Length: 343
Ligand code: TXA
Ligand code: MG
Image (cartoon, rainbow, N blue to C red; front, side, top):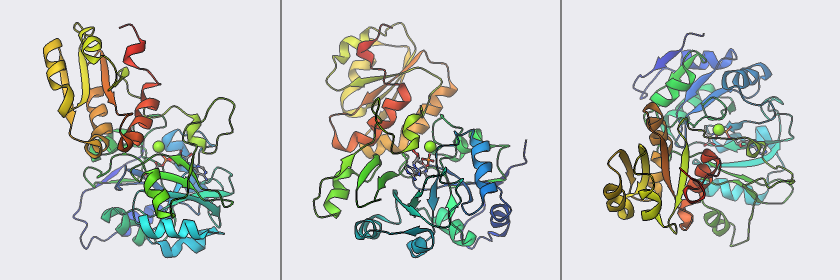
């Protein structure tokens, strides 16, 4: 077990010497970002990047996203950047967008041997200050053990990474709560690889209305374009089942009368139904898709701390703003829909 420093200083005028020296000595620092907490290391060092794989227990073929403090650093670490990619960065960065580009100078361990690399400029003020102080490209996957929920609070980050890293920086709760949108701009093709809070439509609009291909799910027999798609993600300890808006939810919920259920539901629709049918339950309500996204991992981890028989979560597949949430819920549940099962 490593000794882990908890950094809770006021970040205004903070001296980053200690945190930067961890990074320069191939160590690991957990940093908050606007999406989820990241496990940061020097992206130029094979040793530092190997340490990330060990701390996360991550499969060695799944590359990291590289974080820059400013888009001016792009030309030092990538090549053949298309005008479309530049335009996307100009529009959405700093922010929750990752673009896959041809790499330059970045450790082959960070890119898992691929000739490409994902680049992101976070907008979180602490992430920005820390990256700037490091003055290096920083590899940072989400700060969870491989397969677990991504941390979106300081508590979740501590629970995952205490004893595995040199320091954890407290940035409070993340403001988006779901990982960045990942888009590939290699070989003059634009492909959406992971849904996030920047939607496919927003990207298409930004590029003058062109149609973008989605390869966010690896279908059987298809070549995987993003290694992360092969693995089970966001696993909860409690069994998770999904409820669609089009389901006969009064009937499905009434079948769970004798179970201790944690419901994650939109406040506008389900409150009455669930309250009348089951006394042995807890409801977690959300107001809209933004609210749902930012609370999702936090609520799932809180539920996991208690003893529930199962979790039932609303699957917002009829809402275009719900696509990133559907993607995470689908993977997290292992594609289990309440209407298909016998409980
Ligand atoms: O919001 C985020 O993106 C967070 C914060 C910390 O920035 N990071 C994050 O990293 O979610 P991670 O490692 O959990 O997810 C990175 C995803 C993986 O699915 C990985 O396979 C994909 O990006 N990826 C990374 N480099 C790639 C590449 N060169 N080609 C294709 N996919 C890549
Ligand atoms: Mg992750």
